[in-house]
Length: 111
Image (cartoon, rainbow, N blue to C red; front, side, top):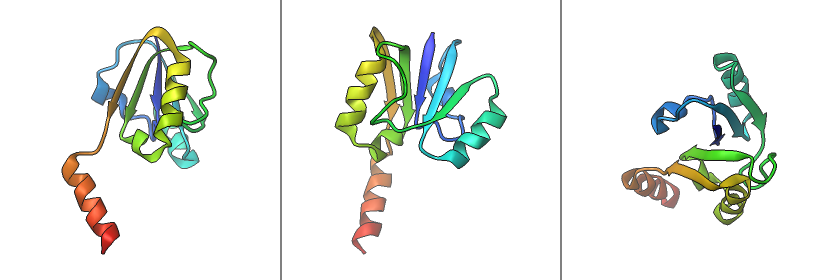
C-alpha cells in the first residue's frame, strides 16, 4: 500500500484518517514543517512540492489523504494531479474546515 499525505505538514495527520500499513509519502510546500516531519517520522518519505504538480509517476499511489490542505490549493489542478497519481481503484480521503471556522475566517477578512 502506497499512501500519499498531501499537505502533510509535520506528518501528524495520518492518525486522523486511520491509515493502515504501507509506505507513506508526505508532500508539503513548507520546508520548516517537512524538517520536523523527517525527524519525527524517519521511516516515511517526505518531499517538498505542491498539490498542483505532484512529483510522482502516474498510477503510483494506492491512497491519497489530505487534512484541510486542499482549500489552500488550486483545487481543479490538485484534483487532476490526485487522479493522475492514483491507481485506477485508488481512494481519496480529505477533510475540510468546519463551516463555523470558515465563517469566522471570512468575517475577519471582511473587517
